[in-house]
Length: 312
Length: 315
Image (cartoon, rainbow over all chains, first blue to last red):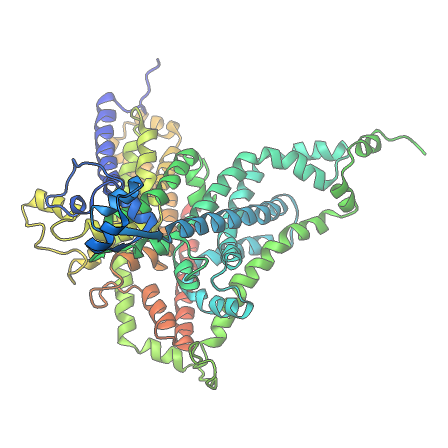
């Protein structure tokens, strides 16, 4: 090994490592706390001092997915022995399950709207990015800046006319409306990111394909698309995460049928205030997929969060 | 007719869709590819923006659609700019912006600097640090209200444990002095990794050869840091500040879940105030003017900033 003046010494590395790991452990605490609270009983969740060691239970998850009602002793006696494991958990508190909660629906809405808008975003974004990358589009720089500037608007500022417009078109509180809206919101991201990825594909491949007699269109989807596959995949995950996390439009424009999980989770109420284990359970189910995606994306994170302004 | 191998190959790759567009010029394809995106953005962004501007000159109210809509000229703008409450929300926003950016830049840069020492396992720990930034601000913000609970909250317990204060003696989101800091803490927790990632890219973009040359010239490490590291990482740092500035100027989801703008209106940032005017008091015309003022402010400040950023880059 050759000596290098720029290589940090072992002591420096060790010192840096300790500080960074320390920060990481502090920063991850709230997330671990969410996951842990999901498995606590209501009493353990609000214990003082906060309980680190506790007996895990799935009560939070049962409460998350069911709606329950308090039953009198006579009623309970009439019902007889609980038949399922989740019934048994609920009976401890003299409650009976009356049906499923809305969480399932809300989660499904998040999935439908997230994937729908991501798909549209990628289709529109790839086409536009290819054109911006390869052709001489009139006013190209202005159009690209215009696309980016749509991101600067506070969502609430455009929410008023969008609300009016959607009401006129019957799109308020519908999946189609939300998909369209999130597509528009994320389009700037997808165009800018994909343009960066396509810019990196050597134009010679296409030229070779064109000389071989491919049309532009064939060159696009037989040569460029396969080469851009990784870029498209990571852009898609970014669009999905942003749509998944979006709150402002969701809370203003949806109420019943198309409401996504983020506005719903904070409204999970138990007896006397928020039912924290249930809230934490809902949050865990909602957040963990994003953490997994983050691990998958780690090589492209920087690019995604800066709209491709910083690569590497 | 002369035989061209190109034609032969072209005809050997038949494709129904491609054949249909075979005759199209590059220019036509470019338009077909770009038009749908531009059209969607015009419909969902620009059209509403123009509508907002138009509404801002009227006294229209969404909840009273049958009232006569009157053209009131600049009256909405006058009222907003003379409203003391709005200046209070602007002040709350400025406090939030300033401190989140200062803290995130300091901590983010320090972390990036340390990670750049390339200790073993730095990739894994970087990914862990990045987690908060990727999560839903509304969901996470809501859970922080639990961490901030006096007595039972983890945050209060830890602070109490470290300082000896009684964990139930202070309420981060119930106290008018602490609430502005409560939102700064959560935002910093969430977004420091963002600044860190960008700074890390900046630090990694500095070629080793510059440090080697400085070492030959016997420049001290301290001097190297201030004359090489900082100036070369500055454009990246400024970019991070731009992104965080725009995002936090628009801040809504995290803070609305965390404090709801309270106590009183001490953490009512402009977006939260705007939401109340528009969707609770239903003063559509008035809030449209408000929205226009905000948008002009962001856009103006961002444009000036980008000019400065480009100057720094050129140096």
